[in-house]
Length: 317
Image (cartoon, rainbow, N blue to C red; front, side, top):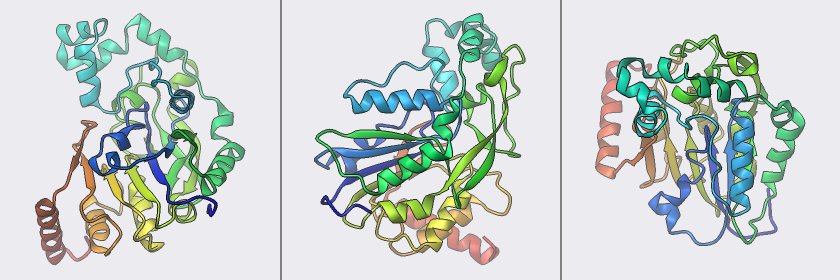
């Protein structure tokens, strides 16, 4: 942990996807009030996205704009259809048959060509690269301008390897998922090579431990979490590590379909531990929309009452 600089502004983007939320901290009201540069860490496990996230981090650190994505930079079916409707070359698929938008877009020659050209760069997700960047973050001090660091590993509850599912199409309509989860897109067999690969073994890191070692109580810490089901591992690990008093702004989406855990149980545990979540700065993503909405105190009380009611009916929640 760094001791050579004062309080820092830190934004950790767990699940950077197509760089859609790399600047989320500039849009949340609590973070907008902060002065000074930011240390931004973009975590993305999907190997096919990694080279693009790497370029986003480099461009933003250099003070330039996020580069154009090679494919629709969307992370859900809702966002994908919205993007297609507004895109000059792709909207024909929506106009012809809105029920078959995905199949149409993924079959367009230009899209097939662009998707086929995507490839993984193994060194980005190597143990050496990931370990070095995680370690550097523990001792980082801000520079004159904000810096962005891409770390290509999956957020989890331990330092291990995890199996992820999803080829390039899936990465535009829902993100790579833990192996075995339902809801994967049926892939276009005209896309060959690595872009068509549907199973990946990627490095995972102990997220709770890294946060504990890298963030100090005096830092202003914004944590965004959209990790396709791994929150059911990460949040319990953070609670077990007693990471209270660290998070100043929390933005997340909870995903269903994980055996042995529910979003209700995560809400109950997170809201139930005093000091774990900030009092007035919790945001949730409207499912699949990419829009984070702030939970006000009245809604938070309603959620707590609802959770307590569920727990009375089912103590296992």
